[in-house]
Amino acid sequence: MFAMKARLFLLVFAVAAILPAASLRELADAHGILIGAAVNPALLADQAYADTLARDFNLVVAENVMKFGPTRPARDRYEFTAADQLVDFAQSHNMKVRGHNFVWHQQMPRWLTSGTFSSAEVAGILQDQMRAMLSHFKGKVFAWDVVNEAVDPDPPHGLRKTFWLDKLGPDYLDKAFRWAREADPDVKLFYNDYDADGMNAKSDAVYNLVRGLKARGVPIDGVGLQMHVTLQSAPTAEHLAANIRRLAALGLDVHITEMDVRLATPAKPEDLVVQGKVYGTIVATCALTPGCKVVLTWGVNDAHSWIPGFHKGFGDALLFDAQSQPKPARTAIEVALKLIP
Ligand code: G3I
Image (cartoon, rainbow, N blue to C red; front, side, top):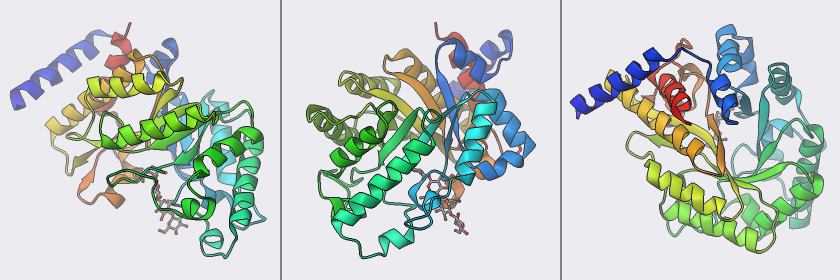
């Protein structure tokens, strides 16, 4: 196994060595691909963080600051300062912005979850939220995760039991997408979920969910495959391509929205190489499969990734290390982007 990994390492770096170094975003631009990262605007003051972002990415998404809780501190008060800072950075560096998210069971404001609102009031509060966000960021954010992680991670993968299901009923996705479309006729509207990247029971459930939305004429434009994976759980190229193809056949775009590949820490050098193989495979598969032209990583560098805080003993999941130095994963994406026709 190690000999195979070592050969792969040599191959990747031999190819990288004979091709001139290039920024990922320039390579992506040449293929009409968007390569993005989730950003915490408070970190833009860190020069290495900001430089990395501006050099290698042509797309950003807010890791947290566009969510319901952070943007709506009170029923009648909106807070866009941090999100505006991110949009300003993106605009001044000629980057696109993805929006994340409107309807999720996490990072909701406490005034909402602990309130005693009727179903009609909750519907009104959500519509107000989407109207406010879609109007404030109109023309600045090209696609929004309207609903995030609605499918139960446990079999049989029905709708997750959440505040939204409880308050708005089982057709809450239909409502949310229709309200979003009413508020902005132009922006792309996405459903986003995790562990549904390749072909498995959960991705079947996501597929059936969005097929149902399409069949009912609900205005959905795409599906986000989050791609929070390990070396073992990452989908094969074949399974990812098959999943993208079946979603594209419904008329939906696919974005890889939150990719990271977590490693047991401290990471072994060979794991960093195999991690590169996973990143290169996913980016190449997306780029080569019609319907998928967008890949984002969930963070910029390993110093600020969510992984160590949520998956004990794991980390080193991104393209840049804690000092913002490029890892084999970045090289692997560079090579993949150089080699695709
Ligand atoms: O902002 C507060 C701060 O005021 C407070 O003092 C501090 C104390 O814990 O918490 C801060 O909030 C944290 C927030 O990130 C901002 O840093 C929350 O505790 C923390 O739970 C939150 O974690 C985020 C998580 O979503 C929330 O569930 C992660 O950063 C973020 O990476 C993660 O992102 C999600 C995507 O939105 C959806 N898909 C899965 C992905 C990973 O979980």
